[in-house]
Amino acid sequence: MSLPHSLFLVIFGASGDLTRRKLMPALIKIHNGKRFPEHFAIIGCARTAYTDETYRAYLKEELIKFGFLTKEEMETLDDFLSTVHYQSMDPADETTYFLLNDRLKELSPQYENNGNYLFYLATPPLLYELIPKCLHDAGLLKKPGLKRIIVEKPFGYDLASAQKLNKIYAAYFKEEDIYRIDHFLGKETVQNIMVTRFGSTIYEPIWNRNYIDYVEITAVENMGIGTRGGYYDGAGALRDMVQNHLMQLLAITAMEPPAKFDKNGFRNEVIKVYQSLRPLTDKYIRDNVIRGQYIAGDDRIGYREEKNVRPDSRTDTYVAMCLYVDNWRWQGVPFYIRTGKQMPTKVTEIVVHFKPAPMQMFQMKEGFYKGEELIIRIQPDEGILQRIAMKEPGAGFYMGTMEMDFSYDQHDQETGDAYVRLLEDSLVGDPTLFTRSDAVDESWTYFDKILDYWKKHPETPLYGYPAGTWGPKEADVLINRSHSEWTNPCKNLTHSNLYCKL
Ligand code: BG6
View 1: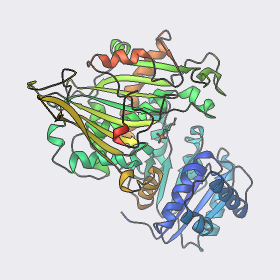
View 2 (view 1 turned 90 degrees about the horizontal axis):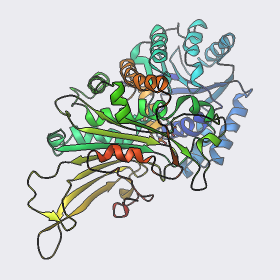
View 3 (view 1 turned 180 degrees about the vertical axis):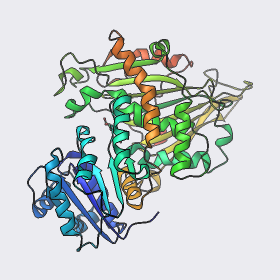
View 4 (view 1 turned 60 degrees about the horizontal axis):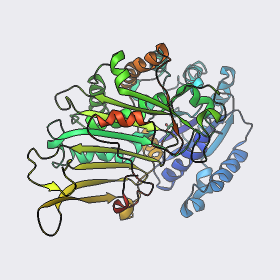
């Protein structure tokens, strides 16, 4: 794996939100780190009638307006923008692709590029089926040279549509050239889980059913759906967050050590986790999956009042569920996962609850000691916190807890942006941190059962929860089965000693 001598990054959806807010800021960082191929150009494609100059001016204004850039990036912005070109075309109209083909040909001599193309689909998912075919029909995939494609989520809407997409992509690209992006895998602390587990001897020997009581995986946000009602109302939390992001977190937490950390080794183990999930029956779904929708509260409007949302919508904005990974390592250990919009704070974290010592020689003043906790904080304050038993100073032998807390922030260590990491991987041709087609298949096979169940049983409760709260109380009942409650961090996660339960 190495950078090619030359490469064109072609972004469809170049005037959209994702390009402006995520891709361009990430590309500037890669540019400033001098990690682009020697001859590299970005070609933005969308319907708006920009020229190279007006597109650069638009990007410059947007990037400055939203304050995405550091001082150094402001200084090098013009230099970065000189690598950016624009081709006006309609990605939904197959007759316009020849314009792109001509443009790439025209730019080829300047960039010594004989057909090395990386396509990025930052478009509405509706176009995911069409674009590969149009690229092919316009002859853009014919020339020698590398041809890669990056596709944003959602990759499919259910099992059938995901399988159809997989088939289409397989017809035009080799699997190793298809980069199905899940930006959670680009997050530093998510990757760090593998280092904590497989690069050290501390945790891995106790990372199993003998020592771990249960695991919580939380990815919640304190925002509503903003301007995304059109997409979100047809998707819901299960499709938007659980089927992809939460499943990736579950897989990394539960996987066996890969034989090698590479695209096959890592992704083979992800698949095995999905294959080991306890099969979903109707009864299992009824007892273990809770869905909710935010209603007005805390001065925030309810989901049904949001723009482009049906006033009688039954779309889930919250999902909590309990899953089991039925293998030797995890038999009987519940994994409680949850996601929700309009919660009190934005936090993504994994809490591993260890079992208490088999013999309770000491107790806390308040009574029984429940066991240690390892908190893997993925955001906003990336780090790791180990809560551990300690004698309370003074008379007697009472147990207390102390916290060993590490955050990158405290050590002035910048954690890279997920898009920087993933874009760089796609430039050098490393798909390890991208979702493979069989993982898409397995994950949808599992979640299709829940979607089907909800469809067949529209009477399945959809619990309303006031915006700004931690979701329906039925989700608390779910986790109470492990004699516990959700770990609800307070708003200020920056320092461990401020870590609290609301
Ligand atoms: C996206 C979802 O994939 O992830 C959004 O579509 C969600 O609904 C976002 O807000 C959360 O990502 P992050 O990195 O901000 O936690």
